[in-house]
Length: 118
Image (cartoon, rainbow, N blue to C red; front, side, top):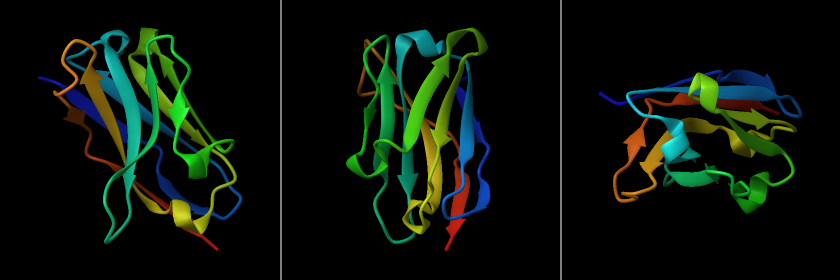
């Protein structure tokens, strides 16, 4: 059974930082494209950052230079370091995994809430 468990969300003031973690079980993140998505109330879920193998990570335009995705294969964990947080970053953040051999398959975590106060 595949599980993605996020943690690290919380309430932070604008300009602050948070680090989200996603611990995977039932899969090896080495073989998966790993990503972070977010969904604000009333809005569609959107891609924040993704990393595939040794390729350079990709970021949504509005988080470039502020967020950084990384992976620790030994811990089977993906991280999202979020700096210079803005109120518009407020959302539920979800970890996502897609097998590299079957990109139509997607696994999701339960989400972790990030709230940035102004």
